[in-house]
Image (cartoon, rainbow, N blue to C red; front, side, top):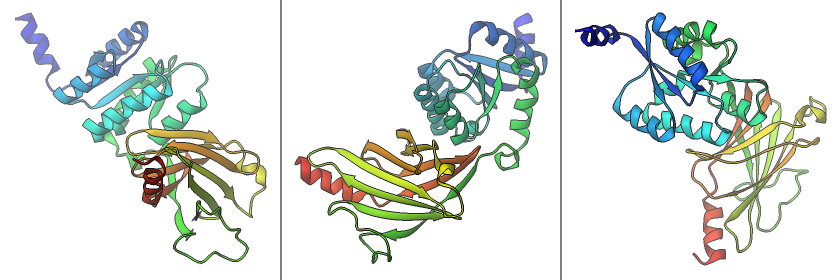
Length: 277
């Protein structure tokens, strides 16, 4: 009878998944959520997370930053794959200063985050806001500008003043507002590696404005490479071919430029001929 009463109390409650949290903070979060009318389910790892998402529905996810950037991204991608709307209601519990690659992921996926010492006092109201309001309503949402293609060295005449690319390389210019992104793509002879060099240019800003900016090369299901710009706004990336590739460049806090690199099939063909595969 007591079991039935407890089970009955769970009906109608919002449910949160707690993933990879330390036992000390995990127990406190569960107690707070239970007091405020939520129920919670503890998931220790990625494998169990996948099984749990396939079997049940949840209103929110609370993650620990004990995970590396790669592990955190895999968790987010599993959530996006199995429960796309749930990926919009994720809270990351942080401790200490955030590593740059973690901050990049938090912004890339529009994740909310709370410091560990504030999580018990602020988690419930944060979760309620995530459930109540759509992503575009939130003030903290990431601003992403999509750059448009201005020039392709294979399909267009070279603009006046633009130097020629190497014989095997293909050059692109993209533009977003006042920022131009110069991108050159080439395949390494006899290798499956693709070389991408780029530079951010803006005549209205000093060169130092584009120093040490995060540059991330993403495929649909993973991050292929990441780097930062030098004092001239230049960057270099090496990666293997993947479909639906895009550059994500962090130009300011929660402000990114996305550069869709959809014209890469020619690189795949060149690699195949070069390696004989």
